[in-house]
Length: 411
Image 1 (spheres, rainbow, N blue to C red):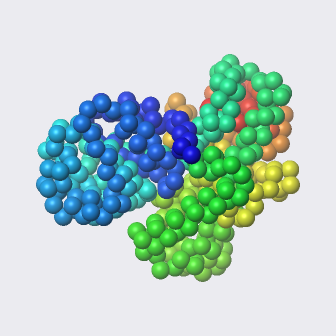
Image 2: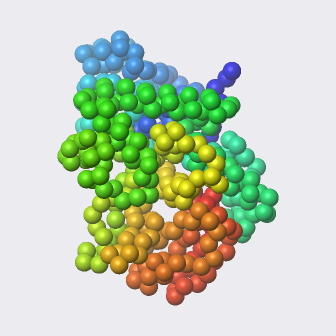
Image 3: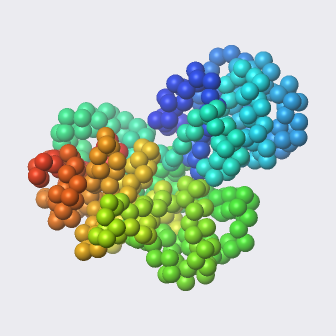
């Protein structure tokens, strides 16, 4: 069976950057589709070109041991050189800098974690590299595969701030629920049944544990790492309690923070930091935890039940919005006051701090925390993503937009 290709938003950006001199580096977790995307672009290009895989020990050894010989065999006379799995090189950034400085060739590389490539490439290539990140499918990309006609109509309706017909709204909520249970890894999205989806997620997680964690990071505490992962999966949307996580995982406080940093660098979790302007009145310390892909999170919990049977559906909805913002390149913060007021997300857009609330049910009015934030920071707009329909209200000088959860990727 031919491999199914789902159109990625990043493809257009890469095609635009192919005409610039800079190296293009694609970061991302394993199995998000980096190789598939690179091959798709590679096939479109005209002129002398080569696609190299640094999982081939002979190719990467030549690159590391004799860069001039590597250049003679693989770079000279080529217009494009693509290098997949670049993190396997021990001399990555330094030798790539040599190639960039000596050859009029366009280089495109990929690697499986931002930390690996940051160490081996980016630090050596300041001013010579564009760093792009590929995540699991966002909900728009998922819809382009599952319901392309509805996606086109949805984009039109959101642009006009209009509601979809009820039957389409219900169908989109069903698709969003499916997406929030199984996540956005392309191979999971194209799997035929539940058993296949679970098997793919199991493979992604075990490969991550065996290759990235054991190999590159050389952590001696694999048992503690697995315990930490499972504990975090049960706490999405909550503020991290370091003492509690340390006790559950058996990791020391310093080792725990190192493990959390690795999980974030390898695209497994996202730590949402507090937004504040007044340290005396607003909480400014511990972050909140989200998973960048809910399929992996639910696999760790061994829980793929539908929303109507779950007590964590609110957390799933909140995590869905967090991951969609991340995939748009927006790193959301949260706001919490010492008096107990809380806003799920605060994002920076057009020079403003925009508040976002997420509700798993249907909302009718803004809550007190949102009104308090509006009075304090005076944003021009605010968003409430919920299970209900599309409408808006005016609060002070702020327009509060109530939109279905599936509208979050279009913010």
